[in-house]
Image 1 (cartoon, rainbow, N blue to C red):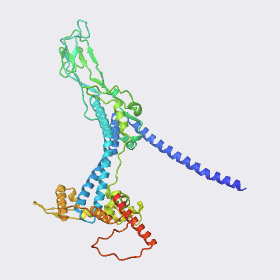
Image 2: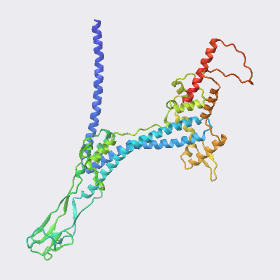
Image 3: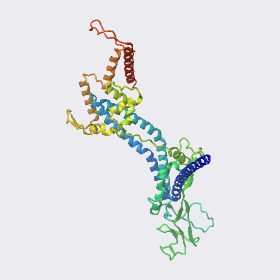
Image 4: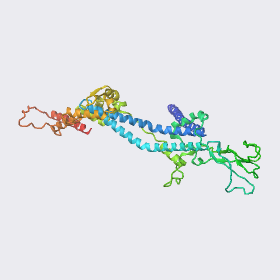
Amino acid sequence: MKKKQKKETRGGSTAPHKVYLLAAALISFTDTATTNQVINTGHEAVNSFCTEVHYYDTLLAALKQKIDPARQRLAEQLKEIKTLTLAATRYKNDELSTVYECLLAEATKRALDSASALAALDGPISAAAATLTAKKAEVQTHKALTAATKASVGNAAPQQHGNAVLTEGTVKSCSSEAEPATTLEIDCSEAAATKTKISALQGLVKDLKDLKVTSQAAIKPPKVTVTVDANNPASQTLKSLQDGRFCIDNSDSGGTTAAAAQKAIAIRDLVLESKPVPVALNIDTTASGDQTTAAKPNHVRLLTTDQELTAAFKAAQSLNAPITKLISEETSETLSSNRGCQAAAAAALEGKLLDSKTKTEINKLALKHLGEEGKNIGEQFFTKLKNDKITIPTTADPITGTTEELAHSGHFQKVLAFFNAKNKMDQGGKPQSLHQKAVKNLRNRSKKKTKMGIIKQPQPNAKPLKRKIVTKQNAIGTQTKNSAKLKRERLLFQL
């Protein structure tokens, strides 16, 4: 009976587990289906010139979003470095010196990491953006030259000389010049309703399998249709009419209208046909396609090939520049594990490490130095820099402002030089940070001790030491205590 109950219990616990797995799989499938549906709907909407232009704008906005926030953050990091540089210099002889030096070191490291990451990503993303921009310009230029439904016809005139297509002796010919009209702009009002579907692709760039664009092969001159109407002109002496459409016999009763003339040749408006439709280019297949289309030396590539477009886009579509937190956004807990801040904290407290030598206790020491647990670095140490107004005398007008204001003013170098000179004067020409002082003190104390912590013999001119009875137990305790203290000092040097 008990075994049966256990079996039922096991069976009962398995069923919910299967339900959870099924639910997770269903959610995953639903997410995928939703993504694919949005992509398919967006690509279906790209079916004309206007929608294709909006498609390019959407892809370009997506690429811009991949790197612009990181560029902006790097600019903010560099701005923060200037603030901390001036703060560390201004408060060099203050108790906050080690804090600002620690924050400056960490801010500099983060900015360098951000710059390196941006440098690695900027190339592929910028190349993809440039290729898409070029492709968009090609499509627009092609549309400008082929959008006219008809071409204007120049002056029609009888042909006096030249090789005629017809060879019958009485044939007459009429020539005309025609120039296709360029279109300055296209009305895309009808495509406005589909823009939302295409815009939804901006956040799904990494999931795109195809690019819905006009293929390079479809960008070509338009089809031109020329139609000539003739009304018994063979035996007539034709003359041109100024409207540029007719060659007529001026003696005919048709007069200058020519439309009803019985003896005339008329050239209809030229008809242009160019309606390229965007097609889906598979990114993987097209990007790895024929490489023989590479531009030859001393040749200028006029159009972007499908392979160039998809290859450039593929190299960038999965990239994302990381966004690093500013130092002012951090908390004391995060920076307390930073080795530079640990060393700064130990130096500021003159090397007085806690009794424990563990990493956890060292973090606690740095945490205490950074304002205790849960403190925001910006509130603790940057707010001060927004309010510490100072006036610096100069040969011209005095420079006035807070540390933050002066760091980002045109007087930054002058203010920095002023505080550097002031620090040297305050320290007698030998600048020395609190950290350097603490390390020097530790070295001096270490020289007075042996490895076992036994005090050296006093010099002859020193006062005689008092006799003290040392038991075996006391001796062992003294050695252990001195040894632990020396190890703590060595640990400080390692920081």
